Image 1 (cartoon, one colour):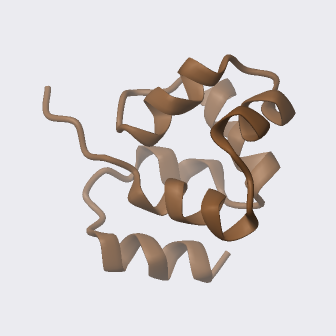
Image 2 (cartoon, one colour; image 1 turned 135 degrees about the horizontal axis):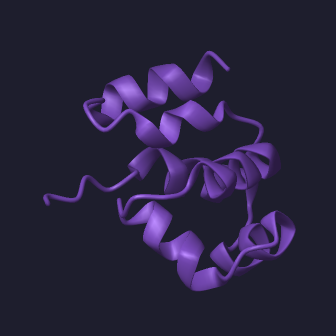
Length: 79
């Protein structure tokens, strides 16, 4: 399984000014789970929804691995 880093997730988190720890705490998940999400590991729907709720994006973005970095930015900026 080839992992595709979710660069959009890290960039969005940084733009908002939050640490991985802060997002994880707000999403009520472990920091390691959040880190894995940024690094492209598969996430459960419940986890995706929790993180998306904190960051104000659509949770389905976590399952769109075919999106390049520009596409990721475009999708995030339109939500």
